[in-house]
Length: 116
Length: 110
Image (tube, rainbow over all chains, first blue to last red; front, top):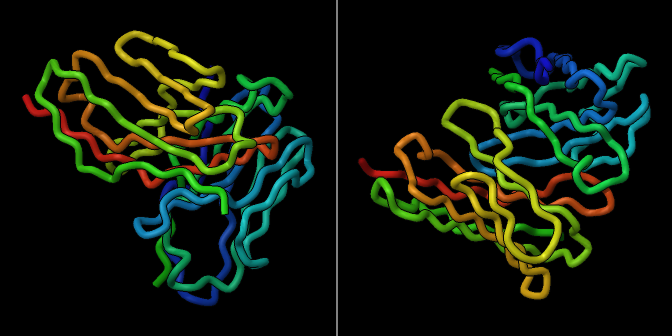
């Protein structure tokens, strides 16, 4: 089974621009979660999508948004980029069911975003 | 604030020794616990998960959970230089989001 894929892998933007990141989950997985990883704050949860609906949201400003398509692929958008948005953005997929083991999240390779 | 705490290390052990990594969590509603390994410049890789009190073994790895003490640990037996990485502990509650600790950097010395 193919793993989680993320595109692009690297991105350089300037302040004020917007960016869209893409994530394709493991085949059959319906839940996609997004995380931001920085050296100072570590791994922080952004949001989770399940069956095209945002099911859970972390403590990030409204500039961070996402969506999920009917094939479970997900996109994340950051508008009006700030220097502090430079980070590794990770997507994780899980089956999204109700059992404990179905909470298990598998991470993609990440998109490294640099804001200049 | 739901928190997961780990000793940031660095932790150094000689090759062949047992590495012990510890984690505590503050949210008693947490139900599942995960250990991920992250090599420098890479994404987190799942090692194992545990949700019942006690021990769970998988090869050289043993996860231990004590819900009364809100404590999770990971033991790595016969540590190898290839185990050198940052180990992340994460907790998941009813909301399914993972709350991560800051990670423990492990170095296995040849």
